[in-house]
Length: 521
Image (cartoon, rainbow, N blue to C red):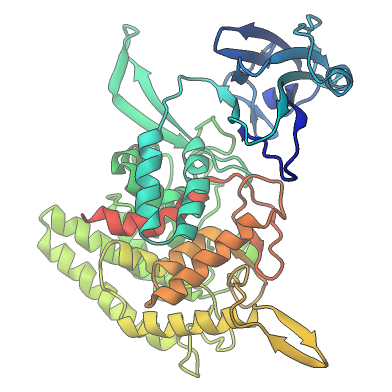
């Protein structure tokens, strides 16, 4: 956080700046005891706070129960500090405009007189813009690497699409990556086996599972953009578990543990069965399990009552159009894999099945008016975001005809117009044609939508204006300040209010546009 002060009235002012953090940063359980230190150098003043009895590899209310919080500022501009009761420290600054450089040494539970850790600067009298005062905060379990060059690259690539898109990506990238951890094992002699790399992901705020396949799939564009090897290592844990025979081989496990970071699997086979959803995800991401493709051959075109990742909040429907898209693309993806491995007969067979299914799917999924795809077969009044078409674009399969993309592009524009601002003026209802909506709903049943699926959809439309409509809508949602939660991916397209999901890695799906343009350079 950088703080600058600029007088707006042309007069001089006497200015002091104060900021603090509480011990709540260390745990989701306010009864836990914390301890702390404050250190100073010629350059910085730093508070360090941690649990007195940390619990490695455990959490409370989505907070890691181990590690240290660091809160620092530059030792300049008459910097002062204090640790102590929230009332004492804050009143001290309000009364004196500075802190006494004292340390509270009575370590106690977070909720016991709520210890805070204050930092203050006295700027004295100012008459013009000030040099920024910098505060930094971090939760550290491992060394941190600065990533200024990465930031510059991401901003450059995203701005080629639009400034609004660059804003969304800047907010998304770290949230996506921060939900993952890179691990290496130790050999029997205690040395590190750097060739044994596995990446694990936590599905934050939707159960806290380990390596949820549909969450990985939604985040996949980030790994393709940053380094596809990260994606390979992320799938490694799932594939090892699957290969060990602990789960039926006809479909993939949904996740490998219900309580991060305990990757204990589902040997009882009580994980949620989403066969088309998760098999399609894994094959599109490049996994080689040929028996999974047989399952897709059997059920993709007519999904029946197969579940999707959206059903948990949107509700279940049979024969969902978007789910069939994923299954069909999964078959075609296996065709590519078989071709790479030199099995031309299998490659050709799978490719032909996928092509034949697309022809049948079009007849089943197009509304009776011919204006849009339905949400599920036979329900002509229904519609939804056909975001799974993104995989067709990403892998450059050209499996679905261009007419489908053109039809959906026109439909999304029509739906978006319904969500633009309408105001009564002199007895008339006036629509403001240039008002950007908060988003296009996920489907015709609800007014809520998802940020990741809208950006995926933006990557499938056939004109820039519609692409930018999706981008501008998501940017408007995150910029309105209607939520104090970390970037939430589920929200109301009509009001811009956030739903239950927060801080999830799936915002990595917002890199869908840059991953498409960078993957095949």
